[in-house]
Length: 262
Image (cartoon, rainbow, N blue to C red; front, side):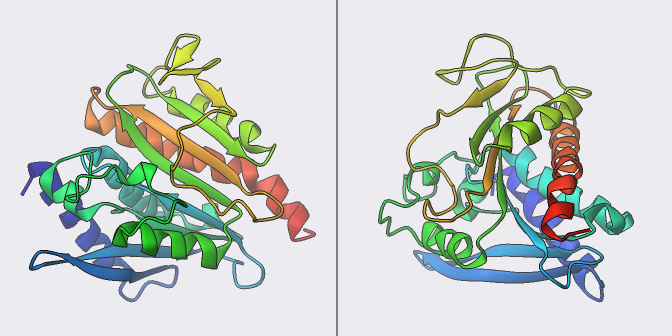
């Protein structure tokens, strides 16, 4: 197995142990499948913040849709581990975290799944991939208020983000980038990942078939694709991603208060 794969599966197993008996964190598997004779599952953690019993704001965080982006999975786990220490930061939120969206890619250390397909080009296109089926089901059933996909890009030396969906998305993405830039610089240039960008933010552009909410959801959820520079130290990528996630929760809080009439 790919060395980084061991670290990811071990981190998820340790967090699963933390969930046992926790008042806030819950673990389950959203589906299982086989490649050849080998069984695989997609793990899910749900963090129920204080006060999230009635009409919570639901946020989905997805990592390692590309199996060679280990820092994304480790950042998702670290984000939850720290929330367990300070659960008040998740007040009013129900946070669904999918740290391993591409288990065979993680095991093999490859961008693609073992099928040879890039899973992040397969969403909402009638894909027969089991990983896509289970993830689309989660996206459809839970009707998230916001979706955050964590990625690592080996073509840049800084953090950047795609802002998609609801008009408020840019107001969430910019503080996330600012927080992340305490650990890694912003990606520079007017073109990032092949799209027009400004101050590390790509708006209204993206590849077809990426992980996203169903288009029919109204009102439109916010959707952020957050990218760390894959060639930078893994520890800094993790810190940058965790900082970005925390900033998004904090910046969304006024919208959460309006929804709950606080």
